[in-house]
Amino acid sequence: MNSCLRVDTGHVSYPIHIGSALLQQPQLIATYIQHSAVFVVSNLAIAELYLDRLKSALDGFVIDEFLIGDGEHYKTIQTVEDIVGAMLASGQTRETTVIALGGGVVGDIAGFAAAVYQRGVKVIQIPTTLLAQVDSSVGGKTAVNHTLGKNMMGAFHQPSAVLIDVDVLNSLPRRELRAGLAEVIKHGALADADYLSWLKTNAKELLSLHKNTITEMVLRSCEIKSRVVSEDEKEAGVRALLNLGHTFGHAIETLSGYGVWLHGEAVAVGMVMAADLSARLGKLTWEDARYLKSLVEAFELPSSPPGNLTPEQLLVAMARDKKATAKGIRFVLLNALGDACLEEDVPVEILRRTLQAGETLCCG
Image (cartoon, rainbow, N blue to C red; front, side, top):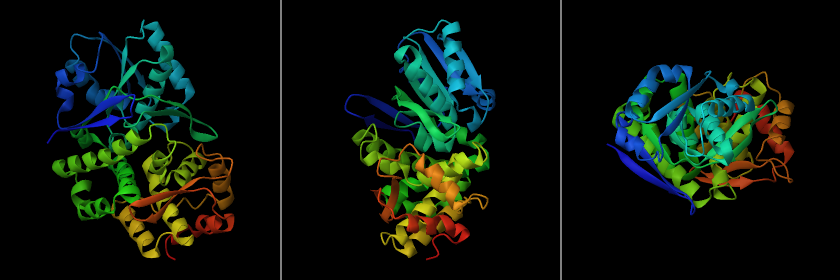
């Protein structure tokens, strides 16, 4: 079951191809490469599994490559400088197409390098983790981390195409699979309550990587993401809702040290904390907050923050979040399951209750 969606921002339009064995379809990939030069960015683990397959599909192109280490701690401005240096050394021009072959870290770094190299070259995203397939590869957000905050340096740079081969998920470690499912749950929580019910019904098949069920899930999540991105490319309005769970989650990642918690794990906890805060503010029923927490746990994801982080530490980290405004911390909260909203005027005393709740989040 192969499908194709389109993201149309008004000035940029590109396809998202979703299906099986896409990496073995040379004509599909070649369609989005206008000139002969290709520069592949991947990491050591993914390259060992899929780089030769990609090169076979690109027979006839002039291919150079750059491999980064595996992990969030490589998502730095230094890595981008190293990629740009390698592109210059290998004679890349503005006609070069960058291909990001890997998970969210690779996609963010390669996309940012493509955005800044000679003021911008084309990039194709080939995501190899579930999190990247359903979220980070779609929408053109690229960034690297700073020691004081996640994704603090970046650019909007839309890809020429996104190619999602669900077969690569078979090599994904179980922890990475679960982390990707957090972003899937997020899509349902912010935009589609019926999707949440479908996820709960199909939890076992999704965790066991049943191909048809996984493919349908990736398609449904990409439909939600592409619809939002098409409406609001640069997060001036509705796209901000895609950050459900991220204000809390980014604080957990930053304070724990990048790579200790996977992004999806932190987002899972962040969603539960957002649901707890929503209920304390009278927006969401405690029953719905508990339902969302139970769904997170059904997919074997953490539902409470690490016990070694204090409310004060979390408050400071959230205040530095790039989504904060002059009014203060901006939260994505829930009026109901499937109905998210932005809130900038959260009383600190109520926020503290959520931060202090720990393992009792969503208990009412």
